[in-house]
Image 1 (cartoon, rainbow, N blue to C red):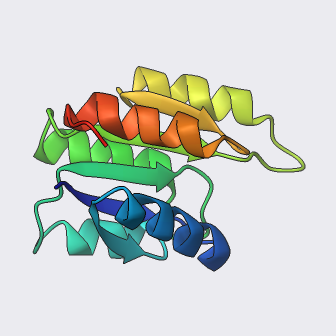
Image 2 (tube, helix red, strand yellow):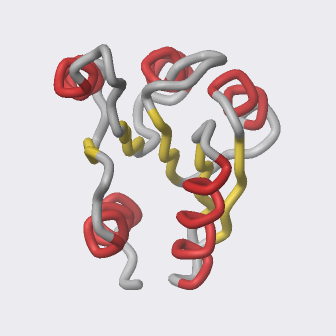
Length: 125
């Protein structure tokens, strides 16, 4: 079983993904923004991080950069649904440059998420 840190500022998305991952046998730690996620990483060593890119307090790109400085090998999934003013494709491209392991554009399917987690944790779900 992997421990996954899930960072997203939308409570409904956090809770939905948490249930999905727990049903697949993972432990999930939640953070409502990037600042909280980075704080949690000081106390927990998650096996995988899933972070939204667009958040009000410490965005996902900052999380990605800081986590890569701290642990260049931790698997990270970056996801975004975009912004009505900003093209989310640009954010996903930047996340790739910043070495996200997997990029997911919302809405994504449960299967896409679980397959990405499976690939990065090398576990059969």
